[in-house]
Length: 572
Image 1: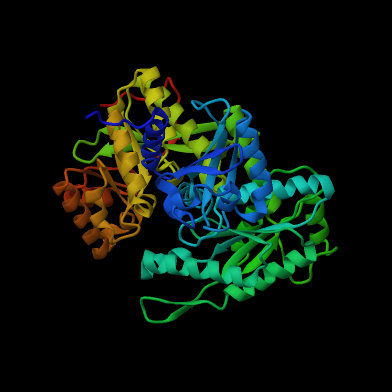
Image 2 (image 1 turned 30 degrees about the horizontal axis):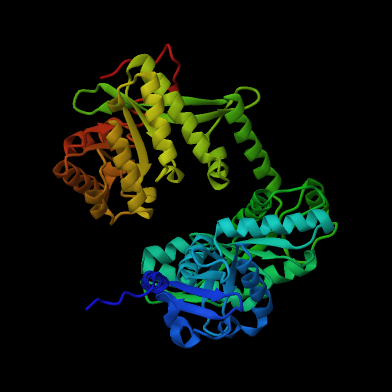
């Protein structure tokens, strides 16, 4: 007896249905010219109101939300006559989000045209994207927007200012003595305080204000609708409000939390978000120097002159009278970079056992307009505060490698905390070493203990990157944050520089001698050499030698002097 076979159409439909049923997050709807559902199948059918088979034979409108039904039905009709379209769809009925593609379904008889709608459920994908977008734009600890997003918001605000006139203000807020909380109570307590400050800012500001955590203990606020009087009132309110927070300390007493705030307003001239933030930062910097726990306003030179003469000003609110000086130093540092007006001096580093000069520590100076020397404490804090220090580091590295290549001398090069974790600087060092043909082992890069322990992970990555190049690494000012000995086993340093505070008076201090002995013993067991700074006389040098310190530097052993290509001694 012959076995009956299903008609080809039924075979095709069964195969199509089986294929559609196995498509994850998909809902496949086949419909006819009368917009009746011929098939509803797919991995996403579980999210619809009824099983897919329950809709078969019904009008497709029953699968759609009433609010969007008319528009989508038109797309279905267009599909029957051969048109394709795609659109996003959010379902109110099942709270799902779809990306929908509608078009004709070929393969059937011409007199019975069919259409197909493929509904791709993108709800989870969109949720993941939104979470990633939120992480990209927000600080994970506080939930506030981060620096990137804040600068975008300020840019948008300044675009409105250019069109409709200046308005609004930016506040930059820095928590006073925040490092003290971290050092006495630990980073967990510091994070808790940062979260509390963020909540306090939310409570005291409006929903239309944009609040950001820029990093560390720095926050920023965009007040889009205020004038000067309104902005100063808000800043004063925040200073008083944050003053109410108190933190416990290691001695069991409470320490009040205060904040320094800088305020800047857009003016008639065109300005970028970065420039406006820099102005607020300058004002905040002056608030710190004026005693903290206060706010300062950025003013241009004309406004400052008026304020100093007693003209205008918002009552008792502070005026950032030092801003012009800072701006001028910023300009001078920028000009020194552009015009090559930095110079390097070298201080000898001496082997205490032989008395031989084995290296020089490079010390940076700036040339004034009359070619006199400007010491680093006059310009480096401003360069570091306002983002020029990476460029300064690159200048020093470039000149140091040039000197090393010319004479084969050994140099110790100081790097700022900002350079930690900088893959760009590692790449720059590698390029310069290769181009100059210098032996990497003659270069020792110095990073302060404070910078290293602030971010162990970045310090380790940076140190390993330099080691991969063949350079040496020195942990500078070791002991300044005493109690951090355990960090040495996590950081691949070759050399430990004993902080000069323990060296300069060591001949008269048994405590300083104990610290020096402890550092030497530990460094020796870890296979690291030691360098003692501030060696000021023969008695100190003798004590250091007897304690086992490897190398030393200081005025007794050699004062810093200019390093010219023709004068640098060759050392081994």
